[in-house]
Amino acid sequence: MRIITWNCNMAFRKKADIILAHNPDILVVPECEHPDKLKFPPGTRTPNDVLWFGANLNKGLGVFSYSDFKFQLVDDYRPEFRMVIPIRVVGKKSGFILHAIWANNPDDPDGQYVTQVWKAINHYDHLLKNKGTVLAGDFNSNTIWDRPRREGNHSTVVDLLLKKGIHSVYHKYFKMTQGKEKHPTLYLYKKKDKPYHIDYCFVSEDFSEKLQSVEVGKHRFWTRYSDHVPVIATFRTGNC
Image (tube, rainbow, N blue to C red; front, side):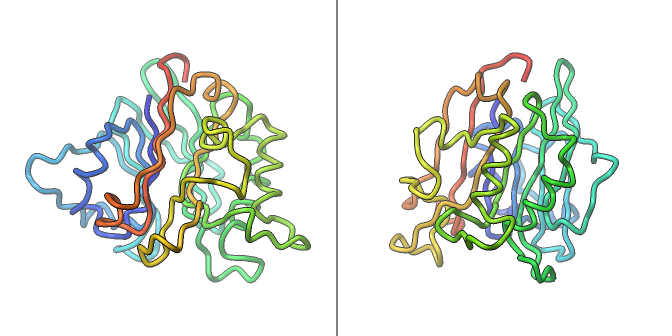
């Protein structure tokens, strides 16, 4: 199974073929237009299920299934945590909880980026288990921007997830430390000299045990389409 997150920098309809060449089963796309605007070119593979969230029809959070998985929004979804979306992913043989993320809430005086994730994972604590849990998307955060006195910085989010047995696939696979990543996921203004790692896929232990590979896109290719590059996590088939 393959989970991909890629902030497409808008106009996903024009770029879908590029990311679909990597054969995602689940695709999380921040800055995606509303499904009513997704007029794909002829021949573009169409998803089997779609959820979308946002106030701007040109720039929201899209979640796509390109497998037999279907999506169900979790009952106690709280839209004020923008945007951290708990989704029950149901397949023929397996299922899990996906928290699709584009941390971006300029209306929250406590913090518009990773603070949204912090608030959400505390509210959805009952959904964060060491089996069947995935968090994927654009967190807009990194340990390098921690504010030590602020509750809910990047490090406290990572620490809370670790206590639940939930790990970043990138850091596990490449044996990296938070804040010292060697593979950027954002190139600000598409500039190679402005690299940051802010897109993540965190998974519970059952997924982590089946982790097969992690790929982070290259600047030279992907910045033709977006200021972000994809994070691609592949897992051996099984219960996950």
